[in-house]
Length: 546
Ligand code: GLN
Image (cartoon, rainbow, N blue to C red; front, side, top):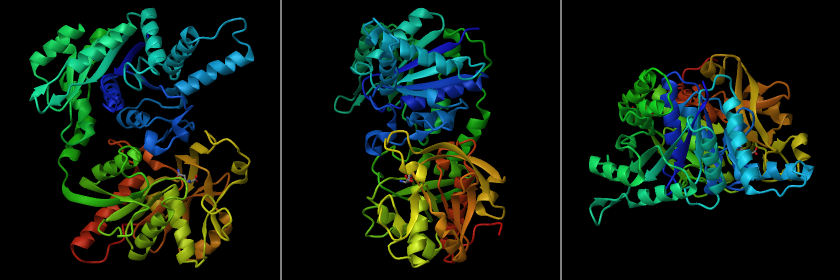
């Protein structure tokens, strides 16, 4: 049977949760036993989001093969089993770059190189590459970033129009719009949806299904109105209302409106009904936590931004699910913590770049070390934990990372010689999956339950092994090592209930139905600390091997 394609576009406004919706649909189709692939197109000109500030773009999600990709791939990972790699995300920048390089090589000799057909052909070929990435793929979900009507997304729209024209039986378009409730008028308005579908039609795209983001379920008469104006059957006008408590409710809500039945019918896919047992079991735990919330502080630089630490937030929730507890996250801006950060059961310092906020993170690490409060340092969070230890335990004044102080007397964190030779900033970090060997009798080994793990990286700087024995003498344990290059990947403080840093990003590999072991163990340590705090005693040591 031919491969089927679902194109997901968005209208009216951005930030409607197209990624979440695409991931949810992917999950429902997988639940029916179909093998899916997922692809996100981003209309901006950066070759990847790696060089963008998190305020601009939110988190950069990293794949095993070292792709620096859009954060929607994080949703795809958490909701589905689709395999994700560099081919799962493409930007206009990447597409133009490929076409222009080809032009310089002379591949189009004699021709004028144009948006249509050269750019659109490249877009179409990327859809096919994604479809062929894994043998047996039956459905490809293609999400087009941006909003219909944007100048920059036009080549993508044109490409999917052509793609469907060439395969009329194998494609459908799902359009996600916003149906606002106007408080002053006391009415729900469908006009923006009508207009955005009009724009789609001008481009030559007819939606097969309209998903309406709304505050409350849409009345049937409103669905009938949208159906009539947009030429979509009423049953294919679906409401995607704001979820009550958790984004993990979305697939279930959509399934209850029979979206996956309808997609299978439209694409002539023969598949048994969706099996959501495992997901619903997880959701039950989320909605009915057995314990009062554990309070975890995150000390970072972009705390105001909803999505800058998306995967970290989600992974903490997964850790809470594994411990059947609820979770309250307290945000601390690392360059404004003069008032202190007291009051949480544990703290997490996520990844980051540059000087701003460093000293605040050092304060957080010191506070946790001295008061034996659980601390989880991720990437920069581990580097900070080690620099703090050097300054205040090893008494190495001015110890630093050469990222911030290139002339420090004690370069605890420094750049590898290979990295020093690199001039370009885009795509040149230590990126993607690397193996790591764990030391038995460590928190890390206890969490993973195996000696060899693989985790994803995105950084330039590393722990400087010249200081390793001095650290070990004072109680730092390096419990995870990338043996080939002798790089320290995990550090733990021996005389502490749970103070652990990782040079990699475990948050990219956590799912609500299979929480990452380090997040599970960290939340467990925070729970123990919260119980100890409640009973007025000293925090207990989390159960540990040695
Ligand atoms: N800035 C640090 C480095 O490049 C840490 C990066 C990160 O936290 N992702 O090594």
